[in-house]
Amino acid sequence: MNEIIIKCPATVANLVCGFDVLGMALEEPYDIMEVSLLDEPVIRITSKDGFPLPSDPALNTAGAPLLAMQEELGRPVGFGLVIHKKIKPGSGVGSSAASAAGAVVAANHLLGNIFSKEDMVRFAMFGEKVASGVKHADNIAPCIYGGITLIRSIFPLDIISIPAPLLHVTVVHPQIEVRTSDARQILRKEVLLKDAIRQWGNIAGLVAGFMKNDYELIGRSLEDVIIEPVRSMLIPGFDQVKSQCKEAGALGGGISGSGPSIFMLSKDRHTAAAVEQVMKTIYDQIGLDYHTYVTTINHEGVKILSPHALL
Ligand code: HSE
Image (cartoon, rainbow, N blue to C red; front, side, top):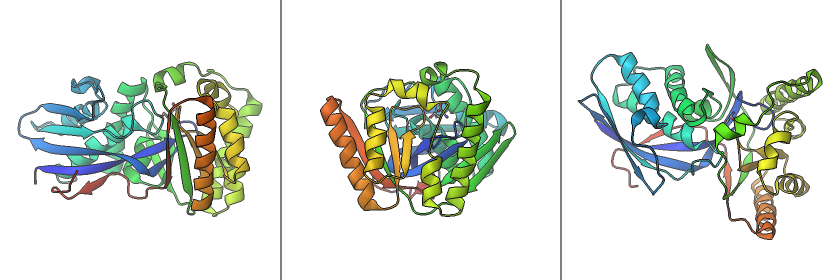
């Protein structure tokens, strides 16, 4: 087999309080990629759906991880990629990670699964470096592992899958683009000790809440006193969305990754749908185009579909 089709899930990084250390994979949206093994050491990238993705592999979020993989392989193999991008770049739900993680999982599959999941995260982080200027794994790890992941450390990599109860996720993507590099640039470089204490209390509370199936603890731990106060200024209607979604029954939520998408967690589908309605009403009033998803956690990560799967 030298050609496969894969499905690469969107992801929510940070999970509000866990900047760069927590992330979760979503059932929707997702990208589709066709990946083939070539016997010459090149990387050919074609983008479908009209997003202007760079074709130079070194500048492409899917290409850079494959260059790193090629270098470690030390033999002349190449890859052809056709990317059907459904996760909009700059939306905050892990568009670059889906390309990077998908490319390495597919390439590894075509090579006979010679690399571990951790190796694949290590390669895929080169894609995040292209996209945001720094390596981080809070989209890549859940995209590859599925579910919710804690990235305790990236140098060396230490990734822990966190079990969680059934959660419904509502996402609104106001149709503006926030570049992760810009959203990182505006952050303060130092934090007050009192804020750090509150933040690590929340991270520990959130992880404990997931593992104990304690919805109330999950809800009260979804608080970010460090990043959100700065970044939320980039997102029209943010405070309104957050407070009204909670009034509609959401456990809590906040900025998805570096934004502008906002996500909310709910215990049941009915509440998640009510939360979607609140988001729609707010953005209709503001007069800003948006896209919403009502979805759940994806537990498989990047999935190899049949080579003949219909696109
Ligand atoms: N942790 C990263 C950030 C995720 O918030 O900048 C980017 O998707």
